[in-house]
Length: 515
Image (cartoon, rainbow, N blue to C red; front, side, top):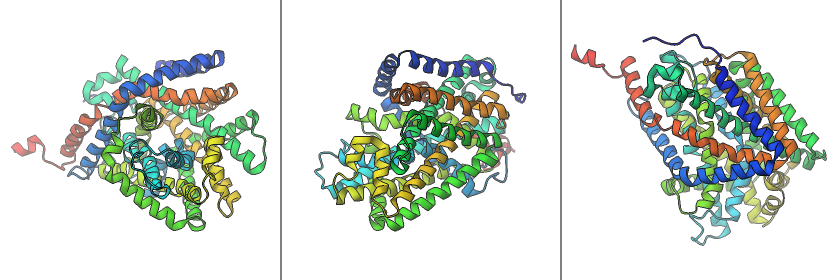
């Protein structure tokens, strides 16, 4: 079969996706209320008509992935490489610093408290005591950042992308997800292919610029709370500038150097921070809460993941999160494809769909569980700051309850900065990959997107927090076309796996059977 090897920059996709982002910012500068109105109406429409589809899509992705992982096809090697390029810890670290960094740092503190104060509607009529309400509160957070959320980022879609690029020689772009349906023509002058690339870039850009600005605000609050630094626009811009500088240096040095170094460093920081909180905090409460909430999630797995009764609550929580993660999915699959060469299908799916969610859940149990413990002992100690100041106030309130709270809070801010930097560098890398079709895009292209994300985020910050919130909600809107792109892998990935099994002689081919 003829393969495409002369990868060139797709300037049309570059101009349309970049131009769209600039227009979003320009319209926000002209009339932010108008933009917020457009986004809100589109957001509500997306939640109403696509929420159920997204829930079923994520469930199907997870279930099919697990079946493949533990079938006879689990030993298939991906990426036409016998030995993995990255060691296991380095590989897992880079995976963890994708979804968790997108907001899990601050949501880990706040979401369990939200669900504790206002019990999720599925369980609100059970009549639980405050002690009993801890388990469903943590469990609901586990669902939103758990097995299904992670599985959509790097299981079936990654298998299709790796096969199209590394096994067949086609460009590593979101449009490659449609290769099993359209064949080689999806990579030529294809409107469908270009649309797939453009909506994927816009979705992941919105989902990256939002956290940059949002966490700039969070860190600015933390610096004011801890060190008395004025929480002004100038401070927030300086914080964003530092994030972008770190990310630019990282992405310029490449995946195998800067990105993997920052990822390993951050995971080490998180492990140390978790260990310290476990030791000096309510140790047994945290361990017991994690185990019981994980068991609760598994016991109510289908009803929690497929709950449909309260549309308003779903739009604010489950469907919002999963729309956000779906928007990330094509680009994260590209990134995971790059770092997973030489891994088996079983290793890939277990790492992404089981290990990463369990680590995320444990992080939520330690950080959020510490807040729940203090809220039980002293009602209002965490929930009152949450109501008054939102997520950044919640983080600081939790840290303030611990011995050495100041140093732990500073550690938390450092982790936040590095986490966001690892997200920005990996996303900028994948956008560059999409535009140039190779897993070794030019350095200037990688750095350009880091700087662009930073500039646009700063402009949105100057408009106000409403612009950042509008951008956060906008990614849910962009998830609509992206989620359609992610449907075919549910059946094309198993077909590709069977073909790879013949190529790798895991199962006999038709020709060899006849002989």
